[in-house]
Amino acid sequence: MVFNPAKQAFSERCVLQRWQLKVAYDGSEFRGWQALGDQGVRTVHRTLTAALMASHPLHSRHRQAPVLVGCSRTDRGVHAEGQVAHVDLLSLPDLDAETLRLASMLKTCRCPLEAPGQPPAATRRVNNSFHARKSALRKRYRYDLLLHPRASPFDARFVWAVGDLGAGVISEGARQLSGQAVDCSLLTVNWRASCKADTDEFDEDYYGSLTKRLFIETSLDAAAEKLSVRLECEAFLYRMARVVVSALVACARGVIGVADLQDASSPSFAKALRRVKGRIALAPPNGLFLEEIAYPSDGRWETPAKK
Amino acid sequence: MVFNPAKQAFSERCVLQRWQLKVAYDGSEFRGWQALGDQGVRTVHRTLTAALMASHPLHSRHRQAPVLVGCSRTDRGVHAEGQVAHVDLLSLPDLDAETLRLASMLKTCRCPLEAPGQPPAATRRVNNSFHARKSALRKRYRYDLLLHPRASPFDARFVWAVGDLGAGVISEGARQLSGQAVDCSLLTVNWRASCKADTDEFDEDYYGSLTKRLFIETSLDAAAEKLSVRLECEAFLYRMARVVVSALVACARGVIGVADLQDASSPSFAKALRRVKGRIALAPPNGLFLEEIAYPSDGRWETPAKK
Image 1: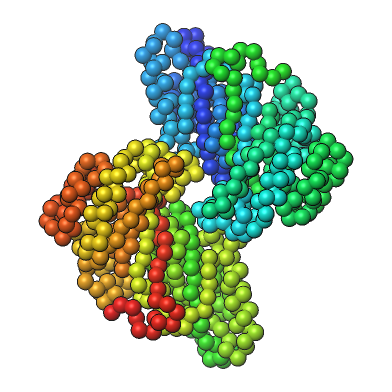
Image 2: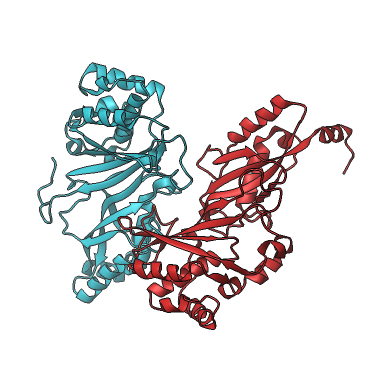
C-alpha cells in the first residue's frame, strides 16, 4: 500500500469509539449472521457492515469497513428480535459536535435488515470493555410452533407448522428438561466438528465446560394455535435450540416418551435423541428467534462475565 | 395451427368443470393479481395459472392453460386472505374415477403463493353458473395500521406504521363515514381512466351506479398497538380502500376534521379529500388485505347477484 501522509495524519487524530447496537432481522433471506465465508453470500453481518460504512462519513470517505462483532452467530434462516452487536467507529475526539452528529446519524442509519428506512432498534455508546459476545450473561431464544398442519402465507416464514399436536405433552417435556444440565455433545452430534472448522470462532474458554443448564418455558396462544417454546442458557451451541425443539415435538408425536427427557445426562436420553434424529426432521430455522441477550448492568462488564 | 385428429377426439370427450378456489397470498412480491400485462411480470394470476397447469395432467399434457378468473384485482403489494377465483379445468365425464383423482390432486396442488408446498386454502367443485366476480355479493378488506413510528422486520410487510396517532379519532372518523353512500368518483380521481384502459375488465353493469354504501369498522389490539380498519362494500374501485384509510389517518393528524367526513356527498367532503391528497401519501398497499368475499348460499348464483 502506498503511504499517504494525509491519511496517516487523519488516522492519528481519530479514535475508535465503541457502540452497542440492538438489531432485529427477518432471517429468511440471509445466510445467517456469519462474518466469514464467500464474498457473494448475503449475510446479516455483511449487510449491516455495508450499511454502517455507507452511512458513516469517516468510514465511507476512507473506505475502511468498521469492525462489527455480533453476540450470536444465528444460522441461515433464523430470525432475531434482540441480536446485540458492538461496532468500533472512527471518531474525532477534538470535535465534540462531530461526535454528537455521528451519534444522531447512527440513530438514523438506514439499515436494510429492518423495515425499509428504519434505524437499528437501539444504538448507544459503550466503553471499550464491552464485548457483544464475551460480556453476555445468557441468551434467550424463542421457537414458535404452529399447532396446525398449514401456516398462512403471512406466518409461514416465522413458524414450524407441526400439525394438531398436544400442547400439553410438549409443555410437559419442556418441564422435564428445564433446569437440567444438558450435555451439549449429546444434543448436537456435529457441533464440535463445525466449531473446529472455523477455528478462530471456537473459544474453549468461552464455552467452558460443555455442560450448560438450560431453562425452558412454554406459552400457548390458543386462539392463534401457537405454542412458543422459550429456551434460556448461558451459551447455545450449534443447532442446540432446534435439536431441543425437535425432541419436544418427537414427544408429542410419540416417537419418544416424556420420561426419556427426565435425565439429560443418562444414556437413555442419548438413545432417545438418536431415535428422534432417525424419525423426525430437525426443527426448521424459520420458527426460531433470538429473543433477548442479558448483560451485566452498565459498566460492570470490565470483568468479563465468563472465563 | 395443424389439425390434429387425436387432439380433436380428446377435446370432444372432454368437458370443462368449474372449480372454486379460495386463495391466500402475501402480495409483497407480486405485481398484484392482474391477469393481463407484460409476459415477464410476476402476478398472482400468472403464478396460480402456471401452478394449476403444472399439477393438472390433462392441462399439462395438452399444454393448454386453464381459464382462471379472480374476484378482485388486488393491486401490487396488496395481500389476500380470502381471494376467491374460479377455474375451468378439463375433465373426462366418462371416467368418474379420473374426476375424483383430479379433485384430490387439486387439493394437493403445490401453489407457490402459499407456504412452500401448501395447497390453496380451499377448493371445491361448483356449477358453471358460478362466477368468482359476478356472483360476489360484497367484499371485505382489512387495513392494518401500526400506531408506532416503526414496524418490526416481522410486521413491516403487513402494516402501515403511522406513528403514535389517536386510535379514537380514527375510529370516530370511521363511524362518520360508515353506512354512507360514498361517491367513488370523489374518492379515486383516476379510477375511471384506469378502468377504461383495460376495457374488457370494466363492466358498467357490474359496477352499477358509481355510488356504493361503504361500511367501516375498527378494532384495536392495544397490546400490539395495531388498529385494524375493516371496509365492506358491494364493489371496490381502484384504490378506494387505501384512499379511505388515508382520509382516516389525515383526521388523526389534524389535516382534516372528523366533521369533514360527515357527508360524503357534499362538496366539503370532496374538498377535504383533495386536502388529504395534497398533504399525506396514499396509504401504502402493504397494510391492505382482501379478507373475505361473500357469495349467495350454494346454487343460488344462477340468477346473477347483480345486474
